[in-house]
Image (tube, rainbow, N blue to C red; front, side):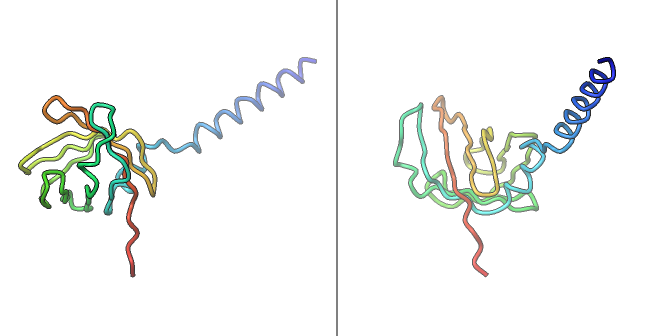
Length: 129
């Protein structure tokens, strides 16, 4: 009976350790996933769908540069990634974007612009070689 409990405890600790060590947090892949061109799939302003951003894109480069047409025309700027926060600088409308979810094909971010809460859901565009 005592051996059975020791065996069960050891097995539980082993399985827990394996799961804890092999799970990769979303934050670990954020930089890798972020690089590339993202095109809008849906957007909302203050929790209401908006179509005024129907051609919105963000493009992130490895060197810390980015392009976006959030202001209506394509603007180049810089960005830094701090955990799940994208900080845009050097543009007419610097913003901080909180990444809610990111994968190799989808990106959901939100930001506050002049008291308006925007939420964006993007799909990653594949490079054609």
